[in-house]
Length: 470
Image 1 (cartoon, helix red, strand yellow):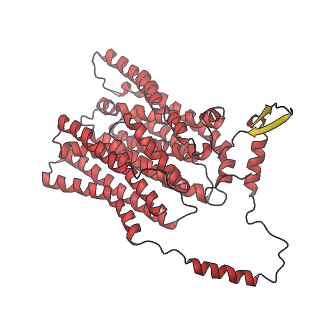
Image 2 (spheres, one colour; image 1 turned 45 degrees about the horizontal axis):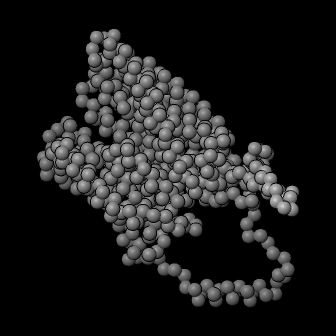
Image 3 (cartoon, one colour; image 1 turned 45 degrees about the vertical axis):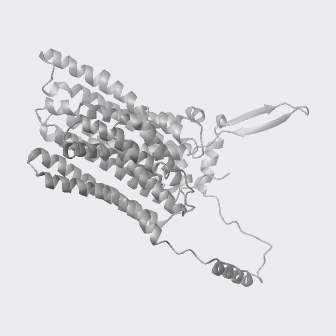
């Protein structure tokens, strides 16, 4: 099978695996396999691929909700049966195709078109799911219309499989080997009279790469000297540690300041976002909104938008201007400060804009960490590095949601003499603390951006990703 076709199948079937396992946070190990495999298969489009995969995971929960309400008659038994039997069948059918493949040797314009098509279909599916949920809670819709809309959603989610079908039946014509040989001979004849004693290098190291290497060489802690004493004695072997942009082991990444800056940037951003997500229903009830379903759908939709768009936006600017992806993570942190201030106003007029803004910024944080970690610390051990990075999500949930928001909410509810808290004081202090946390994260993001700017200039100085050369 053609390499590009196999990589395309791996990505598209990985999307369905992401969608299948998005019903539970305990499925991180399965999602990790899909993510790491496709990051290695598409190393030149890391941001776009991460955004698409994370976007499908975000929309998966809404799709399961619609299936539960429309097809499973809101029966927990039917849902458990569907999850226990249907999901394994999907995964067993796709596991053969989700595997490492030979990555492309250069930029392929057709891949960009395929990515745009997949993103467009996902956005349309998300809009229909949002419409089904919102309209279904406002007016009564006939079952026939609901079945038709859900069928359209499934069709849109399956539609990217048309890409490998097109690649199978309408393959690109490869250049003829005989014509290439003839052209080479013609060029040799034309160059016969020229002076062949001097040769020019095909590639010249860029100035940004030189400054990057000089900056790294100044750090004496990056060089480890190993003394090997043999029979002859006195043999010295010098072994340097990897530079940023090369492949790191987890223990090697631990001693890098950039690793911890990225971890805390992700931890503070995602931890504060998941705090609102876990308490969004209580937030709506506190300000007088009885039906919080629309509020939750709004957060989910804009979370999907943030995940999907962040990959494409950051990929464009990192290739055109060598702009570090942490610029967008920092900007998202600043906007999250604004969102938490809107939440602290405790008004139904500001609650919906704040939820849309926070959902988008939360999606940016969740998606952008993936390609950033792979670019700074390499893909060879990316699985274990990414696994450690995403620990910021559950740790942030426990710290900010359980220990801070939960205790402050319970204290105010006890003061009101009820188990449910009402009024602006239920979460106001929590939101102000979270705004401060995001402000600190924005400062860390600025520091990290300044530190890794030379790295991105060296990795993307040619307009596409390339490893720094010695």
